[in-house]
Length: 229
Ligand code: HEC
Image (cartoon, rainbow, N blue to C red; front, side):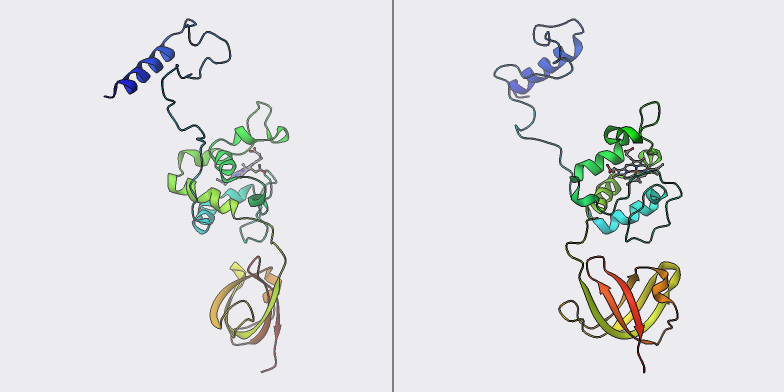
């Protein structure tokens, strides 16, 4: 073992094992922290700070569903079941409010970030911690990325397309349309879209020719008009 490393270990060991104030840790306030002795390199780079690897938002969305986070959190623009209680903040704008690490912390230790009004009388977050025993590291990487991807649309931008309905899935608020080129947005293709509400699908059938309005920021269809054949 490199001598400097060995000295470092012994130093740490002394600092952790001494309960009586030692010469190095004597001043109050520094106890608990390991201070580097002169001449000994720090154990981590100077500007080190914990940073969360970027995960995959789409997979994170599935994690959000798997752990039923929607029980307490609405995410506007998504089709999750509506929260059964109004326990937690709505999350659709979160991405522009906090860094990724904040979301990670709110998942692994809700009480660290909970505001006063969100605490129970014993000072803990009202957010449940059931997921902590069950979440994999991969899931913990993808979930915060999903929340970070929830941002207000830069500018609401609506485009129109024309096509034929291939399938309707009202339960999932989805429609599959075989459409022509959508100018400045998408080539002709058959594709599934979410609709902004179930009402948008009312009165429509597979095979109908339609003109539809798509909100490109949220990627949802907000209006569908039947065309004459
Ligand atoms: C039992 C209700 C409940 C469940 C279930 C729940 N939360 Fe929360 N969550 C809360 C409450 C209440 C807060 C308010 C602040 C706090 O306590 O941390 C919160 C806060 C948050 C925040 C911070 C928001 C902010 O504005 O600071 C995030 C992010 C979050 N929750 C994500 C999740 C995720 C992801 C899950 C699923 C693994 C989840 N929550 C499950 C109740 C819940």
